[in-house]
Image (cartoon, rainbow, N blue to C red):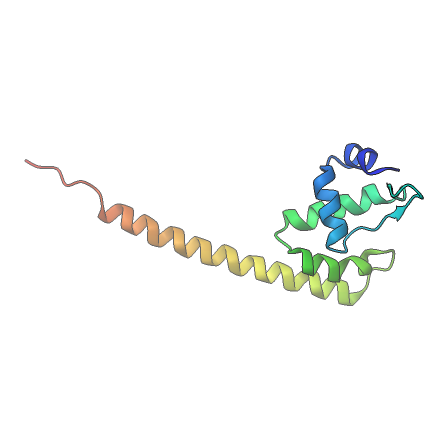
Length: 115
């Protein structure tokens, strides 16, 4: 399929698809006229890329993980994904702490009633 068809089928912009290709996350073949052509399974691959981005996984890590998703789940893949989960859990803890500090500052900034 062509890039526009893949964009429609996957719900991802053409610009994003070009970026994925630039980052080595997605591959295409070129026609003699230079047009990109994608395999039918590209829709599922783009969906996986989108899910990993939604999980706050960076493109470098996605590129590292993607080959392991190509039909052969492994203990190494699971371990890598669990490491990413732990990283996100740490980010959540940090954000919760930042929120608590901000709430404390907000409480301190409460206007005092004048009698």
